[in-house]
Length: 112
Image 1 (cartoon, one colour):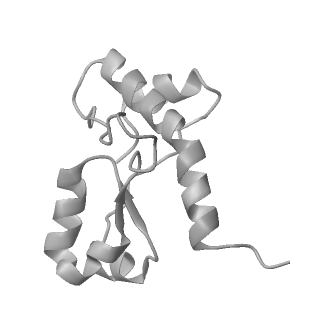
Image 2: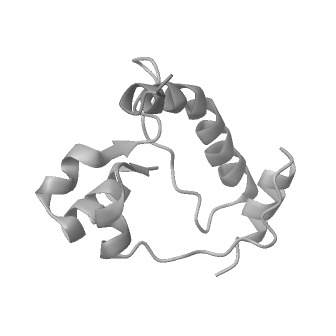
């Protein structure tokens, strides 16, 4: 499916064009091959765990899991919500990116 109108407008405000974006299915094969899987909500991760089994837990993380203590670790899924909910989700993801990058750099250090 194409990105929702609210997604397109919310991302356009920060210079990202989603007009050509299309969803794709997270197949078991794709999920099994992934080194790490990041979800917006715990229910997203629970769904992956259900399909792949408990052994997948070691590669499942919330996008906001690495933000300093006290911050919300979930990004409410705006699907079907109003525009403000899409902006809130976008802003929550943007806020999470620096801590997510630090985590990835620790997991996959670059070789000199």
